[in-house]
Every structure is written in C-alpha cells, then in structure tokens.
Image 1 (cartoon, one colour):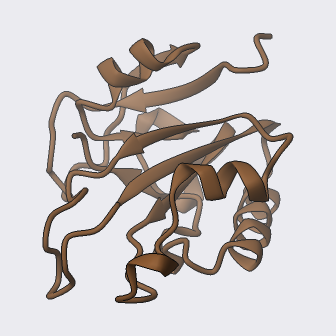
Image 2 (cartoon, rainbow, N blue to C red; image 1 turned 180 degrees about the vertical axis):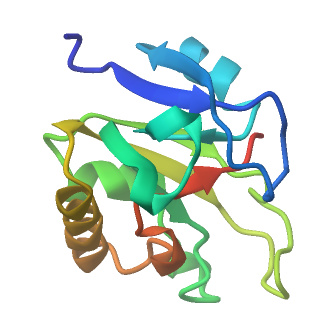
Length: 157
C-alpha cells in the first residue's frame, strides 16, 4: 500500500449535518484526489451499510482532526500545518482548509482553520481508533475535542 494513501467515504451532499450515509469510497494518494473528495461531506472510516455511527465503525486508515484555533485570541498562538509536522515528524498526513478558514466563526475573529488527516494504517477496533484520537489530542490540545469519536464527519469545502 502507498504510505501516503488513505481511504475516505463521501456523500453526494455538502453542508448537511443530518446526513449519515457515505457510500462513495475514494482512495486518496495525492492532494488532487483529496481536493475532489473534500468538496463533499465525508468520513474517514468505513461503516456497516455505509451508515455513519460509532456503533457501525468497521475500519479506518486515517484519523481526522479539526483545528479551529479557538484556544487563543493571540495570533502568535495559532497553529498551522507546520506545527503539525513538528509534532508528528514521521506521520504522513493531509491538510484541508476548513469552510471557516480565515472567517469569523462563533464570535471568534478570522483565523487559520483546517482539518488534519493523520494516516494510521488500518484499524479495525473502534476502541483502538478512539484511543489513538485521544492520544493525539493529548499531544495537541488545540484539536477540537468534539471530534474524537469514531463517528466523525467533515463538511465539504
């Protein structure tokens, strides 16, 4: 397997938080692949019957994290992909700018906001998957702590 490959599952919609079906499997091997799939709402795990829920988790080969930089109003404290590289020097990852990148959100000023997909290798145990997410959060407490379960979806951008 390509060490820079990851699998995402897309919906045909964008911006629909009510959607739970992600039937379109996409293998991402480069930034262009990711740009195409990230246009739609998507998930980073395979679920039973393509129905997103923690209980339906089957497997994943990457773990998504949300960086909103809402931990500080000081621009010097805001994190960038360069900071992610420094913290995880041997872990391949992809970055997608959030739909709120450099926009005001929830009363917070415009700032860098992005999604980080850390490549993990194939994980088939939900508890292990969530444990990895917790470990990454312990290293990077500026990751969104609302996105640490196995049922996370990401809005298309």
